[in-house]
Length: 224
Image 1 (cartoon, rainbow, N blue to C red):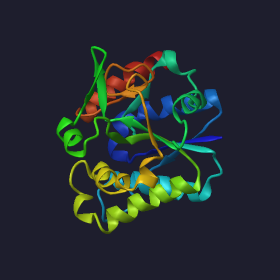
Image 2: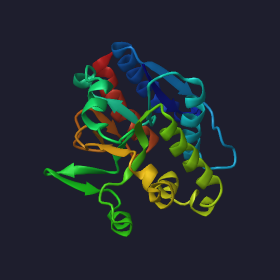
Image 3: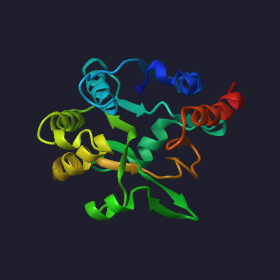
């Protein structure tokens, strides 16, 4: 059993009117459960932290084996609707891996480029996690991972929690410094999910709400 989570409020209805039906259709095809959360969950933190809280809260009530979190500005290409998450999990969640993040980068001319190369060099990690798209196993180890992420953001690393890239800052400079938690992380290739040059899921960014809506609607119109 797999649950797919999305957090969005009415201020982005201009594009979630297209992205939510696409993800619901995908869940319908594969027998997954789509769970939409519609309000900010941590009043005194940046909105992006509510996504992490959403995952934490969902784990407490769900018996799904895996939970996938997708940002509202994502779309699935019509010709890839049949690609199952089980296939991705089997192929990429190997060994000690219990979490699959989108890479915060993309392929260009067959070569992977980080979207934040300065941060990559600083952290000595060419592949950085994009916190807006992930697949997580519903397990005690992952629960500890999420709990630690939120605890650091609200405590020891609170000074980083509202500095872009907020959740990624705390993830890289806190959670992933613990070898026990770091080893849980794997990555989906950019050919699966990215901002550009991807085949399965496109994750839009650095665009206006109107531009995002236009882009997602193109795929929505093909599906529906």
